[in-house]
Amino acid sequence: MSKIDLNDVNRDLMLRAMISMAMADGDVADVETATISAIFEKVAGETVEPSEIEGAASGIAGSASALAADLSAAAASMDKKVKEAIVKAAYLVLIADGEVAAGERKKLFDIAGALKMPQIQISTIVEDLDV
Image 1 (cartoon, one colour):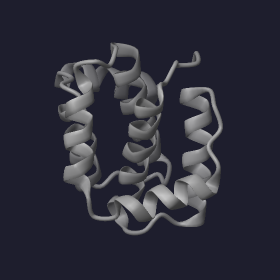
Image 2 (cartoon, one colour):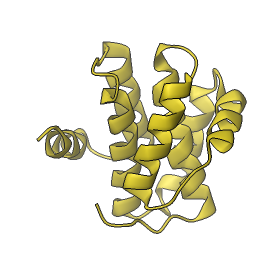
Image 3 (cartoon, helix red, strand yellow):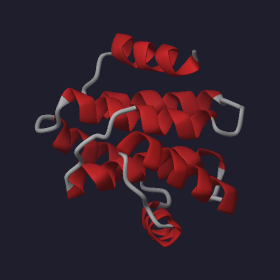
Image 4 (cartoon, one colour):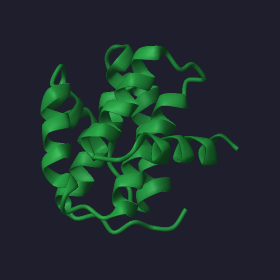
């Protein structure tokens, strides 16, 4: 994957989307923090410290509606590559534990919906990553 240029807002939104996905089954465990860090580096091309992930996780606990509102507000100024990178990163977190619950899949589509991405585009991203 090529590096994505993320401004501070988009970087924050990507990280929050990933954390939100990890929190779908409860708290963000240490192994999930490491997974988020590795996926963030793979998708965004930059590192994120575990302390930043832990701080963001404690700040967003239970605020999925705030994330959706923030994603929706930023969507108009976000280019397609950034939107796709956010969905890719969230999906990679979703599948990292080898199990995909219906609630997690719904959360992915909620993130994509807030980014105003058509479902077919999400399906294409998911299919490309499942190969």
